[in-house]
Amino acid sequence: MSKKQKTLAVHAGSRLTGSKAVPVAPPVFPAAVNWFDSSEDLSDALDGKDFAYARISAPNASLLEEAVAALEGAEACVAYASGMAALRSVFDAQAWRPGDRLVMPADGYGVTRLLYKNLCARLGVELHALLLTDAQAPARIRELRPRMVLAESITNPLLRVPDLRALSHACGDAGAVFVVDATFPSPHGQRALSLGADYAVQSTSKWLNGHSDALGGTVSGSQARMAPLRAARILAGDVLGPFEAWLTLRGLRTLPVRMKAHAEHAAHVARRLEGSALLDRVIYPGLPSHPDHAVARELLEGGFGPMVAFEIKGGGRPEGDRFLEALRICKPGPSLGDVGTLVMHAASASARRMTPEEREAAGIRESLIRVSVGLEDPDDVADDLLQAVAKGARP
Ligand code: PLP
Image 1 (cartoon, protein in one colour):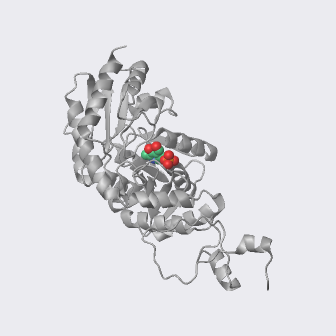
Image 2 (tube, helix red, strand yellow):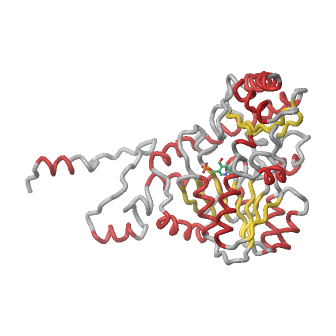
């Protein structure tokens, strides 16, 4: 059949034929829709056996899921448009009934706290925010018998390191599913599933991507637990786009070498900061002064992680603002996981959506600064932080 110009414009050049080349880097597949010569193949694809429509499954997200599952030591992984979408999907997958209980960290990420607070309120679920590093936390979980417990591997922003093994045993006794947000150490620094988690969550926007150029989230676990998430994602539509998945997979390729260097640099910066008379407290799981140093030694791999926090002596919001504006190398950016050092005033950024009472109970003071240590020379980073602290202290 001869084709006219308009038809050629729409259909010419849409198949790659005759090449046996295997690309070393995967191509980006932006197609939202694929068509099939055979109706049977199309029907199979609509059942999830091939790629039909990108809200059902798509090549770049699938490649990323395969890689993250491998790093997490999981049977399967489901990718989302953001870390928050991943946390939402895990919540939605539970068979909540009014009066059920959810346990989550009192000192964790403020946005997760607000999301779960809102979802619980809607369903009549009781939310119990606990300090999961307290020696009493496992006993409290056994007492409360919650349907779900969420922990953060290293809490945001206070960098506490809960004993996931003890919490997982308590969850087993209480009949609770155990969800671990392992964003801070990344799967390179901790494989939450091997410590008893049922679901391992990552905000891939952070270390897995590593370059601050794509949002994303993943949930990993058994095939049985991932299948309902995958089915629910088709309906909710919170899928990871092809460009974001491609960038994240590209970043993930260097995760182990980046995380080793980030942890070494963080340890160096923490030691340098510890000597400053302008700081009240330096928080790093690798310092013997850290309250969970012994747990961190056992549960974190390849060092003590890339995050450092500190409290500016007598520091409030004005000192924090002056400190951030005085930085010359480090960037005052409200995230973590970049190749460059990102610095944040905790109370006004990661804990912004917590109430003052919630921040107080968590121990998040106005003087608290969180640092995601980058790959610059660590002495340059420490020098920059210290000169900015000095400038922040003096109006
Ligand atoms: N979990 C933790 C520990 C985080 O710090 C964040 C974001 O800062 C999230 C989840 C949410 O991830 P996203 O920003 O990709 O939605």
